[in-house]
Image (cartoon, rainbow, N blue to C red; front, side, top):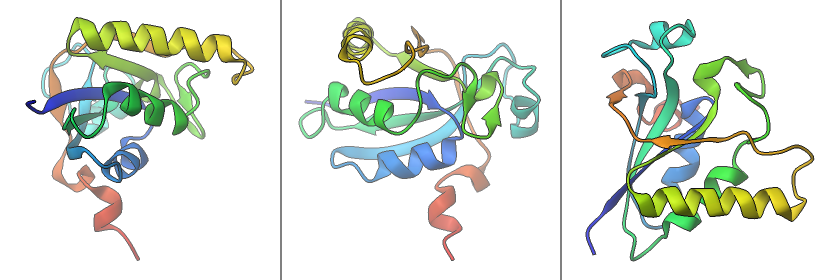
Length: 153
């Protein structure tokens, strides 16, 4: 089977990328901006909250080694999907929880997963994660790519 793409937003993309990179079957990760109205936004523009973009991660994965459902599980495990436009101290629409699906299979799996999680009782509040079609993805500046790997003490 050929490699596939998944795109998620779960707050600051540095930690999200570091977590996904550790998963077997994840081939590549790129952090960037998606879901907004401005072409080629910069980090400063996205941080202003005025572009509509979310900090996001685009994952290339091998579906023979990791499923989209497994990626969704990791996604939900690494952030709080019940807080709109906020992850920890990071506040603003650029830090929203979102799944940017690339095909109808991903769309259906994302909806089913959220329904399962909402019914599980594991969350005190309803999940507010957006499920939207993947749109233009703009790679973040180079210093954001693999940030944690570059900045280990």
